Image (cartoon, rainbow, N blue to C red; front, side, top):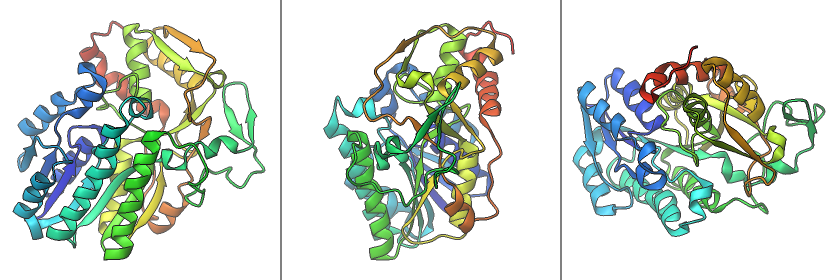
Length: 358
């Protein structure tokens, strides 16, 4: 029996991983206690996905447990022990806005929870591959010091700069404003690296930015493209914060991300770090994303612009994917922003009660 333990199994990345690795023949152990609803309210609940996975997938076992509960995590890992080949840790408090209101919960979920899972894996399944979903917020607001040029619809990096193809893993994480969320993820990120280097475990940190896809339960504080499309479809008021509405993000489809996880699983390293996102292939500014949503759905977005940006928010982020592509040349991105937004609309419009046309 080959077991994959996936935390945050009802969320966007977790559920994509559950479906993907189940199709490869893994028995899946999902751990998710529905805290996304606690963080962001009922509209952001992933319970619908949990029920869908339990109903549709044979070989899927769900545990409604908190990753901060060390005895419970150890019982789960001990139960499957040597059969565990893969751990994908996506459970998190994912919003830097939310973290400022409850720093202790943010830190205990993101940092302490990761520590508990790493130790459970080391004690019961030390040969398993351990993949951690980190964040580009580990770099804090340092990207905002890059030389940027204002274009008609976006900010762009100076074309003569060494980061023209994206921001690499060599960017320093020191001497910068991280946000409390960023700090808790830095702690988890460095722990995952250390368990790889110190204990020889096969671990990786994937430092993602905007992770997206049609299964995203987007909400105001987390889930950029999914929430933007939902607001455009439903006429819900939306607020854009700062940077003349030209802030840029790369966006990676959850399916492309899980393919990257699979490549790492097949040829793992110890303590690896990778910036992962849409790179130069899949990115957009806020203005560009709004126009795409309006075109796809046929509605105008009801939005307000606030000149003050969110504290620590990136003006421009595009990931340099060259390190991961060098290690795993067989991987490539399949979905760009227009395709992602079409999928989000097509798979959710009826559920949202849309009266729009594609």
